[in-house]
Amino acid sequence: MFTVKKILVPVDYSEVSRAAVSAAMQLASQNQAELVLLHVQPDLDATLSRRVDNHDLHNLIAGDIESEERRLVEVVASEQARATAAGRGLPEIAVSAYISGGDWLEVALKVIADEEIDLVVSGTHGPRGIKGFLMGSMSEQLVSKATCSVFVVKPKGYPYLRD
Image (cartoon, rainbow, N blue to C red; front, side, top):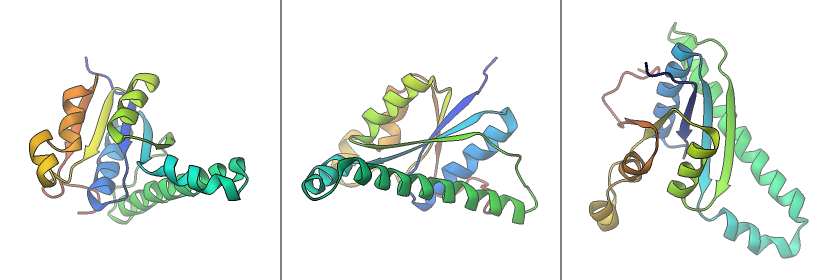
């Protein structure tokens, strides 16, 4: 039997990403699973290294991470409020967060392995540009490389809590 104990949701704060959070919250609620949110800023490492000369490194990193963690908490709270307003309130869900710099796909694959993720719920914007046409969307790449199941949320057409 397929059991889901940990669900990873990559979050870029777009509408489709928020829809993925919504779908993942419903799945986590139904399966009493933990929600693991991941936000990757590709330029985070470069931004930090540029600002290190003028700031205390520890305070700088802690401040940036705390800011992103607050944004992730706000996304979950917003979706929880939408569910309640729609008359479909969800029970308390265990949530943890990862904030990272680097390549989104590499970081996601590492979190999947390290956290023993059972399911990824990822929004897709579809392939973008020539690179997207040749290589596929990031979600398509994740589907082909992940060691767990991946549920891809389309921008429209799935009954989210917000509908």
